[in-house]
Amino acid sequence: MSSDGVRVPTIEVLYADADLAIVAKPSGLLVHRGGMSREDDVAMVRARQALGRHVYTVHRLDRATSGALLLALSPEMAAALSHSFEFGEVEKTYIALVRGVAPEHIVVDHPVPKDEGAERVPAVTELRRSWEGPHCSLVVAMPKTGRFHQIRRHLKHLHHPIVCDSNYGDGATNRRFRSEIGLTRLALHAAR
Image (tube, one colour):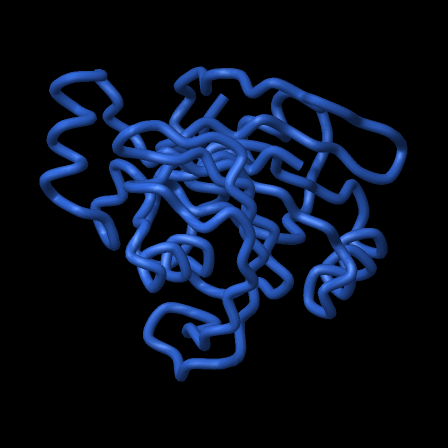
């Protein structure tokens, strides 16, 4: 139940043990309340409800990004996992559908802000094209750093923006995918 007594939708638990849990965050759902948001329906509330216990965030996924969200089940584990994320000790894999034929393999080393509105800092993402079609490619993205919209910014930098990315994408491509395919969400998924 949310703070106003409304039943919160469930979230799929992909893995759980005594120390951590991984849940499947749907696209369109915030990880937690913050900033100007006062939403009750956030991934943290859904995870607490599904697991029946308090959970701690160790990283974030953009509202529009779906996929694996790692949560700690104690403050000590949260600190350890946060440290691992901060120092690039966690291997992360995302799948993105992008405009055009992306490079077969490339490592993008291009600075982006660490947080919204912050100064640009070093950021590195390895990209591998896994499929190509006439107007788009499926790309596996492995960020080596964790910056604000890093994958989205790096793909835009390469002129291969993610399909249906309203911030960094291409309007004509987004409209075509919405009308012809029915894709209305950001085509970015945290796979591992």
